[in-house]
Length: 200
Image (tube, rainbow, N blue to C red):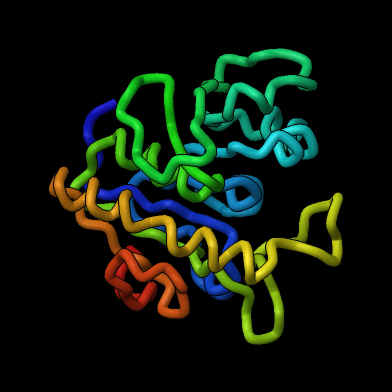
């Protein structure tokens, strides 16, 4: 794959609701359920075994290039051609450069590591809110089937939000601009922009 100019990383944060997701610029990497519900996705990234098992049929139907942590395959039936496995230090927030490694404490950070490996000129984050909406909504898409009334807590979001500093320094050193298209995002490490101004 040639080096893309722009990579959009689409997560599940509530702020994406109402955006025209068919207009995301560049190559689109989706995080977990964003890959199932978005209208245009080029790649899907997950580190979550429970998510992978519940959405396996959807992944098989879509057939999109999917990056999955090796541990996710424990109870899955096979390894189709679209599936790419990687090893992961799930306690690290340092972007891994090795071929079969992607680090991250959550799937969003791992997807950011995937974007880092592609060496684009710009990465734009969508739905990286790291907090629930004013009405308590965790996601822009339907909830996970195993937690229909639940979702990630604000406490866990706050923990994750503070962990992007090391990645931000690596992107800056590599000359890759990272923009956070979620004005409400709790991630302090990246410059925030109005999402409407970066949609194509």
